[in-house]
Image (cartoon, rainbow, N blue to C red; front, side, top):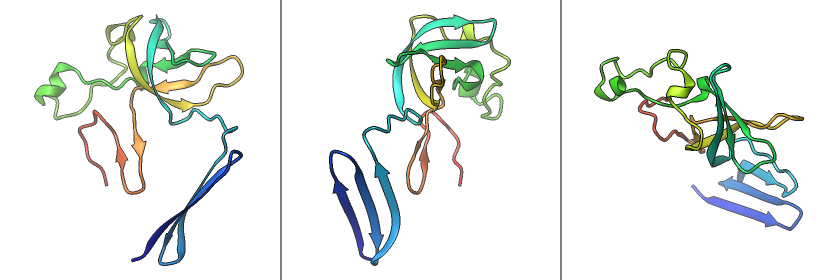
Length: 145
């Protein structure tokens, strides 16, 4: 199988085409003025933890702090490491957010939703990096097909 990668780049836009046996398989397009955050991964610092709404605000360097809800936290308790619960993660509704995360803590987050109006971006600690044939999920112990 003959594979080629064709690239066309200028200051205004970039195009990348993946060809297999002279057939277009994949096409990617990017413009610098498209400042999208979804999918970007940041090392942020927790600015505030709000137990009343089970959420935290995380500074990732944008105008508004990102919103991290307790349901978007990726953690495993001690029982998971020992396999006592069959390798399943504990329900995020069971643990108060203030027991998992604290103000001033550095946390690795990924943007799941763009900022809108006065609201900052929506964040998750369940980081995933999609590829062409698989999705890499660091910290995840399960394999899916």
